[in-house]
Structures are given as structure tokens and as C-alpha cells.
Amino acid sequence: MSGARSKFGVKRMGELDQKAFIGACKEKKAIWDDKELALLCSEWEYEISQPEWHPFKVIIVDGQEKEIVRDDDEKLRALKEELGDKAHEVVVKALVEMNEYNPSGRYPLPELWNLKKDRKASVSEVAGYLVLQWKAHKKSTHL
Image (cartoon, rainbow, N blue to C red; front, side):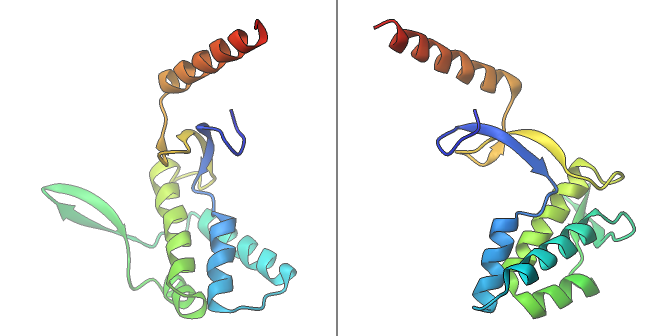
């Protein structure tokens, strides 16, 4: 179920997408030492996991409260200035997921994920897919 061609997998919600973050860093500055990039990823994973850092504000949208990331947060502003918009977006995405899935614990939580459609997957959706895969495999082994 989890491979290069898989339709479904498990996504860790609130975890920094290291591949996207490193790619964004390399766009801003072409030459990075691998150790430097690893430390930078670790630093931002640590920041995202800190419950005392809450760069959100509450706004009202259509009569409903909604939390959004503050534009004036010092850490996020410094990140944007130093590493650019794309690195900033990757960190904000992880923060928003963390705030949605586990705001009090501040550690990534596993979620069934539709990799092709980049969205949450239901258990019944995954089970149906597994049954189809099993039937196809069963048919191909009996030929």
C-alpha cells in the first residue's frame, strides 16, 4: 500500500515536508552543505513542535471563528526573509496541520491519505482499494 505507485499511504500530519523544505532552501541559495540543511530541517521541526509558539489569530468568517497564521509573527517573518516564500509556505503548512490535528500535544499524528488526490482517505475507501488489489492479484496468480 505504500510505494512509488501506491494510491494510499499514511501521512504524518504536522510534520515538516523535508523534501519540499530542502528544495525551497536550495532555490533561495544554490549551495548548501548537507549537514547545514539537516540542521535547518531539525530546527524548524523543533519550532513547529513547541506548544508555546502559537503564531495564530482568530478571525470571524461567515459568522464562524477561524484560526489563521499571523502575518506579524517574528519567527515566520525571519524565515521568509532568510529562506524565501516557498520555505515559509512549507513551514506554515506543517503548522496549520499541527494546529488542526494535535494542537495541545504538538507532535505529528498519522492519517490515512489518498496520495493521488492529496487528501484524507476514509477507512472504507482504503479497504475497498485493498480488496480490488487482492482480487486482481488472486486472478493473476491463477492464470
